[in-house]
Length: 305
Image (tube, rainbow, N blue to C red; front, side):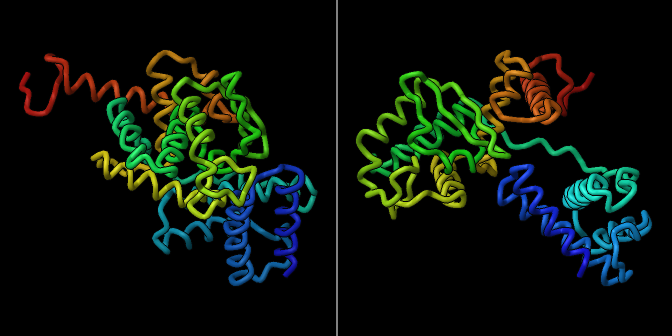
């Protein structure tokens, strides 16, 4: 299928030229492959310059009939728009007709954020029985919250990325872009404890990776997700949290305590400040909740004016 060969060329472009991660490329590939299959099955197109706006709109209707949520449809449309933009750059098509198609409206859902007391509870239970893996867990939590790392950035850390004497850590983010992040005292202490006394007890088969599982190999993203869910249950935290919750919490707490948006953007490794701006909505929502629950003149439910 000629259309699929264009997809392979595009994925190669994303990997070599754009330097995107394997997971991101796979996501693009799945989205676009589904789109191309629909075009082939329903319209038997042999060239991308034969695609019309109607074809794309019918594909989106097809997704809606499958009861796909708006957020997923919006993601697929973004993938298809990027693919068509690549085809335009390569002069396979003469216009990116996807640019005329608006994204479906999605309800704004604010991510889960922990308050300071919940963070303290989560960290306090992480030491557990003071086994080597407990100190590993504590160090991972301190870094995830203290530096706002993505889970992929956290599990990919190498020992060589640590510069504890300078209170810095080197992180490789999306697109293999590196950034230096400051470390707080608690993160440094947790890392020193783990490295000095407990990492070696895990009998490392991987000599370079910082955080290891019980087999001495690099801990997986799923592994850390299970750890956080387990510790949250012990800490009595009923919110549905994940590793990314700590990153959300890091950003929100910074903004609530006066950090400027551009600084938070750099710390998080966001290319676009609009992505970081999302956290200002979280802060405002939390302030509104605090006001309505605590101020005697707030118009709370059950209060008559």
